[in-house]
Length: 334
Image 1 (cartoon, rainbow, N blue to C red):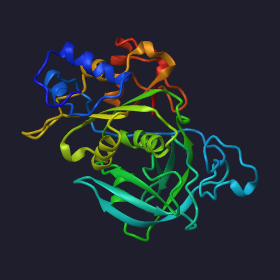
Image 2 (image 1 turned 90 degrees about the horizontal axis):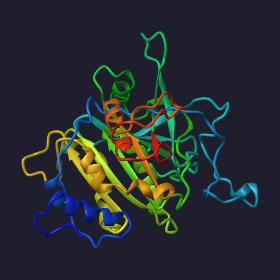
Image 3 (image 1 turned 135 degrees about the vertical axis):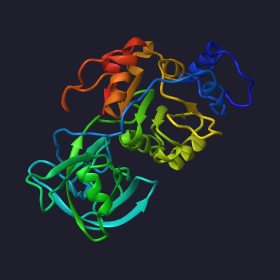
């Protein structure tokens, strides 16, 4: 629908892309859209913060009631009064200049994490000269039913005590981790179309939901992702997202926007704008059929949706999404 076409005015492009909200595209790239649209600053370092209350361990298959206790998954994180688990670092993979993927082993090889979609974990570390431990939440990117491990993608921030500690860890060292920390309760086909606006490591909760959707053959949800970053190297999970877009071209579209794009960059240049969102997101009139997820740095929340008041209070809807006519109930801020 979009590729191999001559440049057309933004209004025509908007009409063409808008069809994607209700009609599956035949394929193609987003180059013409990027050529017609500009950007607004996401702002600041891309820092993802998450928190919330804990819940009991989940069923192995979401949405199903077990006939017996044997159908319950054997899980590591059960919430409640369990406290922190000390988990050994199994492996480390360098992703880019400041980001690594850390795999931590669960207590038993046949255990699942116990996380539901979407949920996070809390990490804790106390250095020898620290008066109090530092605690940071992260959303694992491994499958919720993966056996024996969880994977965290973590960006190193200057003077960030947790991220610096993690990036200095050696295989075999342990980290205190607690969970699950529930966020948005996903269920197959809960919405017809999900739009995701992410910045930097804010992609991790989005990816958790995306994986759950496309792993389930009964889930027909359509997904649109708008992903803002500083440079091309900062696009986390890029290969995985491209693979999803190639495998499900009628249901998954990704729009990448860079603050500092390379010379031959074919995606969005500058920053995420209201015009881009108006063009690629499903329309507000779709009501409960749609949901918009937002996750990124404080500057992004301020520009796109307004920030949260607290982990338990989403706050009022502000920014571009309010100006475009979306309601508070249509937006969830991770």
